[in-house]
Image (cartoon, rainbow, N blue to C red; front, side, top):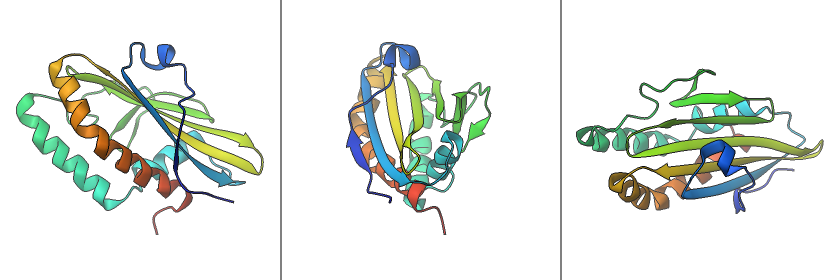
Length: 162
């Protein structure tokens, strides 16, 4: 049985993933007995995400260019390669950590797959640490969009692109 995407209390060690994070949120979707690794869940979210999310990312990249900010994934070290625009920093079958550091803020995405054999779920946790006034302003502006984007992307885990 699969379910809708819902916001949940974050359950990651923020000090290990991104020490000093000022923003953390988590969303979860039930996947029933679907066999899924953290990489596959992240790929479904990011690569097969809704088209409107891709349009928002392109708009974001255009808007941040004058401020000298990295475009999503640009120039980031990725020991685990990239999933879409996200550099993979660490990975196990049950958990994937992606993200990058920039002058204005540092960002991490943690995708966890957990649960019993027939009651599995995927949790996506976002952590952000701002580095200056531009980062704090940027974070304030994107939070409402962030929640919509994550819900839309996580919906693709249970309903992959057709």
